Length: 258
Image 1: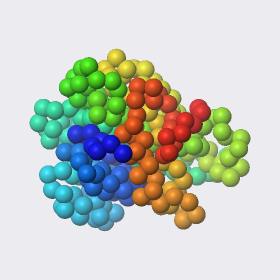
Image 2 (image 1 turned 135 degrees about the vertical axis):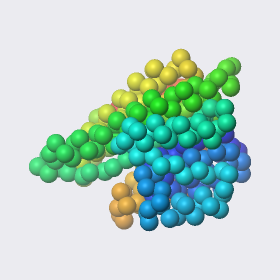
Image 3 (image 1 turned 60 degrees about the vertical axis):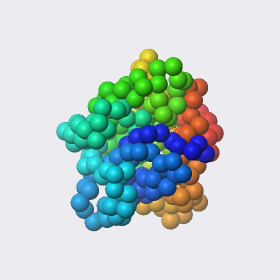
């Protein structure tokens, strides 16, 4: 693992599960980022207590940010807050982790389930990229001669193996999940579009499958702990290069076909 992942990072959905573990492991790196912005929908609520305790322990490094990825106004306000905290510097890395899993067979899935999933899992990451783009560009300008990496900067969209159209026949009947599969496939297209659009700015964009993880979303039968998944994710993120921009990788660094 690289000794330092980057100078500043924003993690969305950081009050539980993979997001919370990302903040834990990032701050415990031998050379942790100087700024870790931990975004969550309700920073003052009971579900954010562990995150608040962690931020209290690491004052000056972890900043808890009110960030509801379903709200354009919240995203804009969060970008303004992050900019003020960076004191003229750019933002190196965004990990778009916030998401929902609304399982459902075709019979169980209606308009609401599809729209709610799409709003959180696709529109949210798109608006994050749009609003934080100037800060990413500012970070990229600090390394004009450097090749793409998570320091120069990058966006990592947390996706899933279940988004793969190619792999769908081998796992569909175990996990039909129409809303989740379809919106995560759309998230992958967002990754491809952003990778092409932001290439001129030196910003790397990739999708990352964290594995099947034992979280509230993943369920108790999942084989991976959050610690195992996130440790692998950080190794992959620190090793990303220009060739990985616009691709879908898993937590072990293996390429997943679209």
